[in-house]
Image (cartoon, rainbow over all chains, first blue to last red):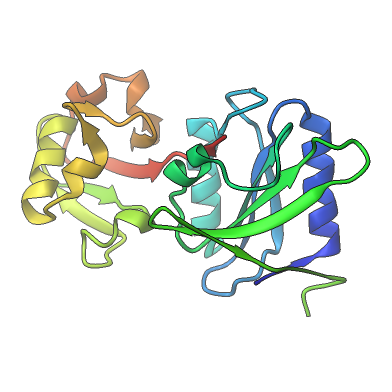
Length: 138
Length: 90
């Protein structure tokens, strides 16, 4: 299960809408081992594509250095699907490289509502999990 | 000569859980061979057909080696190498 604060979810959806029709991407960092997605970090999609996303390599290094300095890890890795459902694609599964992260997918295919689903992707296996949106993380 | 290599979470199974290991070599290719001699299987995760895998980023002193000389990039004593899998998908 992913427990996440409403304002973080809203920020993720706003980012996805802003970048639509390109895929948006980013992370929500939190203290190592806490499973708390506390710090929203929207990233630039270096691919600028409606069907692919990739963090720019220099941005990626800066992100990981920043998390190391703060003793954080990527609790949530999010991206949007702009024309398909909020389910990990084969590409998403092939490239998932953080076994501890919640992979959050937002679909912006419908202008009036955002579909948000979360998954664990470990060793090529996808397991869907519940998303519990709370007012604040305890 | 010794170089510190920072290992991403997903590759720590090859290093017994260590976040950083030491290695040596004149070039990045040599360094990877050297790492693989002590952490078997790690080279296979970094290389495909003798080239750096597209979705694995390797940085030498914070510069992406793709903008240097790739696997031929010279490595010196005291250098810092960081490996980070790309964060990507579709």
